[in-house]
Image (cartoon, rainbow, N blue to C red; front, side, top):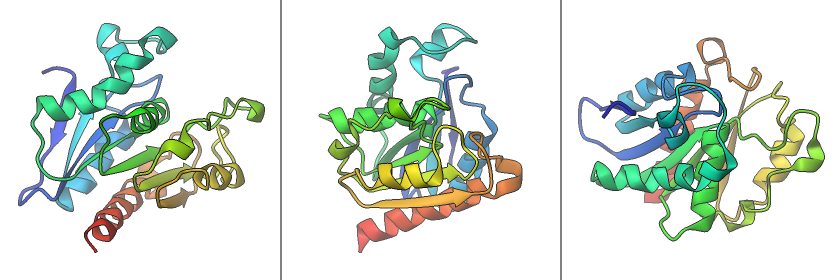
Length: 203
């Protein structure tokens, strides 16, 4: 399948993460690749996917009419690959927003959620907050956020995280919306937070 890439751990698989890209990218975004490498070292299989809108065309933004298919792709990927064990969904920016909406809507829900640079509002438009579905998220959630992200200030992100019904962990890094993965340490920090989420689930 040309629309997904898999990072498999060398040993036992502790959990699985289905991970999607932002509106302007694809599954080969640097943050996603580096995160997949970090998680594989920690026993988590990461499946990086191109969302359906990106499979249709190599460039260009998503269409509102295609969002239902984008949201459904997380559960569909897990079923297609017959993933065993705990399953998490997540993504960068638009990909994370679609994953979070899919979790809120159900009926299928993962064991956890990873939101990288959640696009809380368009830059400069805080009145357009994308928060209506957050109280319907009951699974443990990790949010990784750049302190210079124009889509949300750290204070705005903290307020949004408080709306999520499930337990949340926020990881802040010195970066903008792309999380500067080669410089900020975001991939390793995000991977550590995912492992902590899994440890808490087992406790």
